[in-house]
Image (cartoon, rainbow, N blue to C red; front, side):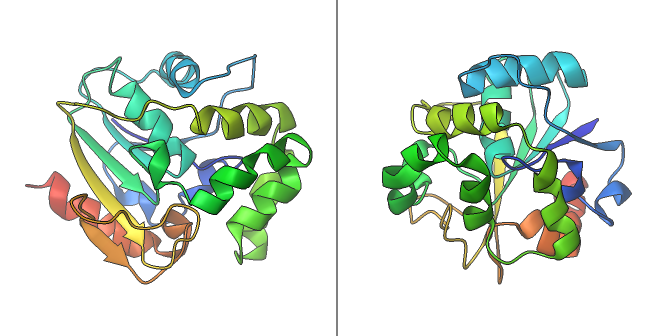
Length: 202
């Protein structure tokens, strides 16, 4: 199976057509928040709720990529695709890191600020977001230990103009750099899918 995890406050609509062209592809909504305070706790809950097993492939956008990194620590995941995501908290924009306590006050406004210009229909994803989940995850990101050493093959797709999680500098590697911003799984879906198809066939 190929499991896709969306960004913070978003849902499976972050992976529109043509994402379902990938074999055995399923995009997941976030679990209902039941008090998870760390990315590791969310990873365990997502594994159970989404039936993520050893041998599956993961795709993670933004927060979903960070949670997917944590899943590789509890499942044997051969390949992880990160789209506009990070492998360590230091990759998140330093200004956002300094301002993240504001999310404790107004998490929905915080999300809209981070998202920038996105299509109206995509903005509807944020209407049902749980404020408690956003508050918890905004705090969790900046206490995250990161991916660390892994046996998982990690391939990174990134937007050249991503101001939330900028493309990482060398020696980190971006495998596909697109002319987009933070929500490239949505805005550059075809390019992402074709890249994954090509790499899954290798």
